[in-house]
Image (spheres, rainbow, N blue to C red):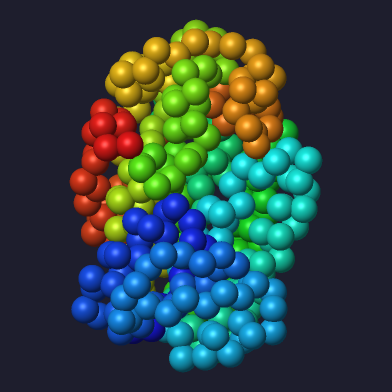
Amino acid sequence: MKVLVTGSASGLAQALLPRLLDDPQIELVLGVDREECHVEHERFVQVLVDLRSSPLRRVLQGVDAVIHLGAAGYAEPDPGDSERALADMLGDTRNLYTLAAAAGVRCIVHLSSALVYDTRRDGRRRIREDSPRRAPDQCAVIHALQALEDWLDEFETQHPDLCLVRLRPHWIIGPNTASLLKRLLAARIYPRQQDPQPLLQCVHEDDVAEALRLALAGKVSGAMNLACSDAVPLKRMARLAHWITFPAPAPLVARRLERTEAGCFDALRQPLVLDSRRARKQLGWRPQHDSVRAVLKHR
């Protein structure tokens, strides 16, 4: 199998690439990014190319599967660049997938996010993959992820023979990734929340990487949630991480955290608890870090 991985210089790719290169069924991994990654392996080739440049068409020839981590690389741009980042994310992904389908790629694994779900719904039930999607009103990055999912709905119907897997991980935590949740905990400050505080989850970067690898088999398609089994309030997460944190108004927290829109904190004000049974049963996903405590212990 020949696999192309976009966003190969991103933090998540550093957890993913070694897993792919250890898989004997994968003959070659092409790492595509505008920045160079520091991976050396006889079955790894780095390709420095823009996802909307003409050479991409040639790079995709003979590729069996695409793992698109590009969206992870666009997370939380400078607020002043949010519109440009949104346009880049949409344009890059649309061009990549259109060219991949034309080149005969049989499987596309799309990294999305649990943040595309409508968090205004009843928080007492776990969110399944068929739950309504609605991005927060004031967060450009999440709007872009939502717009991509909307576009994929149409793209999927146009290419019924293509295996398209949409992985929707909760907040990703790990030594190589820097999600908003991880940065909040490290900053020891979080946006003030009303009681009862909403329940949230997270997922370790190694477990997301394993889900990406498993999805390459092409045995199942569609959306799949990724999250640890339990859920706790944000304040409890901080205690589990052994950090003392303090609540503050969202604008103040946004100023404390660089490259963060205050509107993105809306995703923390509503409960977001995922049902990940589909990934566990159909994909065979078995997270090594299956509790909030375990994920934060290995952050």
